[in-house]
Image (cartoon, rainbow, N blue to C red; front, side, top):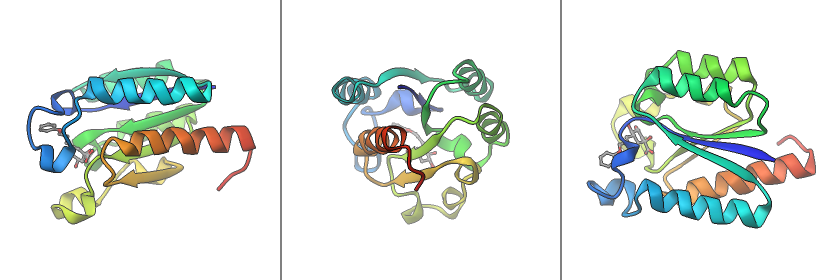
Length: 147
Ligand code: CA2
């Protein structure tokens, strides 16, 4: 089982500012936590981050045929048409993750262009959202159920 964990713009800055919104963990910390959980579950993971929308599309396309995608597209969540198109084109089973509870924040963060093409969305649980996404993908892919 192969899962891509993809992070969008500014998430490379995690841990440096706004810990009350995004937590104290750096993206490298989150990668270690995800890799440890993935190893325990027998999942191969690839981790990537980019500040550029087209790069995110390229990475998604390059992982066509993988089993799952855990995606925090950052602010592109609210604007991108190309990223959901890439998800639709590759048919990657996608869990959308947001560290913060976007529904407690500004109205522009309440809309996601990713959600309509995602299996589901996890918001507001900080780094734990990535671990939950991994568990959910593992459950669905091993049980063969849709839910
Ligand atoms: O809550 C999330 O995970 C977001 O995807 C984070 C995005 C934001 O635009 C979305 O609305 C919700 C922003 C990520 C910015 O990350 C920073 C990290 C450290 C310091 C400043 C920004």
